Length: 305
Image 1 (cartoon, rainbow, N blue to C red):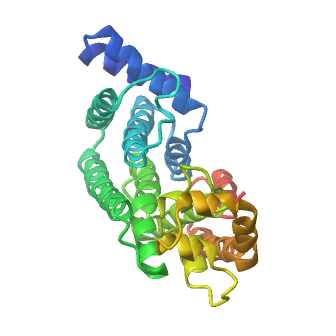
Image 2: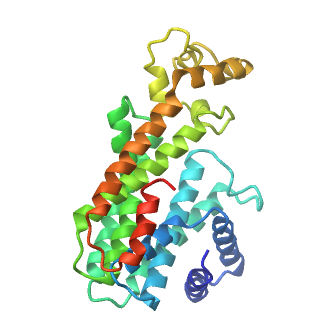
Image 3: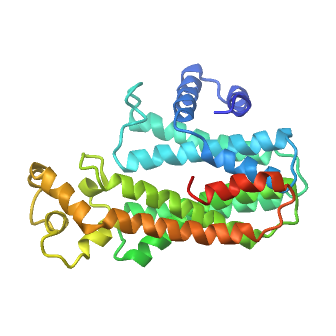
């Protein structure tokens, strides 16, 4: 995490949180998250610069706010997926993780609310409406209500796209009140969607007990496999229809991997990702950003680089 972002979060924690152990647990989560990368604050800063913003205390607060929010939601997502990646090193139980997530949410909101900006209400409206939309997408995903590709794409737009849109719009709003809101929202949503599709393509090759296949999650490549007409592609179909157990599936791991590769589900998912990125690239290319020196950075993101 950018050291100034980390310091801003810690300053807020020092002011509000009295229990040193609790405070340290939160700091530990922040430091662990640093190693995974902080793409949302980088996207926020990029849009701030694209529209002519100069580095101020406001932008640091906003970047810290979005990272606290995303870490909070990552912890919740981890708990829902029964993935203990946040607990491996310090053995925090679910109750403590929920407390950390709740605190990070309130710290995030506090940081954004403390911004001294003439259009703060618009920023807070983005924060509230898009976070609600993202959580609703997560709820739909957790309950595994996906039946087809169009439903899956819509869910990802809400779950992942909402937060890339949020980061981009906050950055733009902090710089100026004159910007193409709908165009920014459109290409940012495609960027979030493309990111999730890449994750899906990588995950479908895994068969561990935290994989999408094990959890019977309806991702795009899995939907493609389940609808594949070739009768030879049958093992994953049998597992999803409860005809065989996970142990039986895993015993035939090599066959399963071969079926995944033969189905071309990974290629299909990556092609869809490329198409969405091209849509986003075309939209972004048409925008007359104030700071043209920063535009190539955005276009590189939309090339999937």
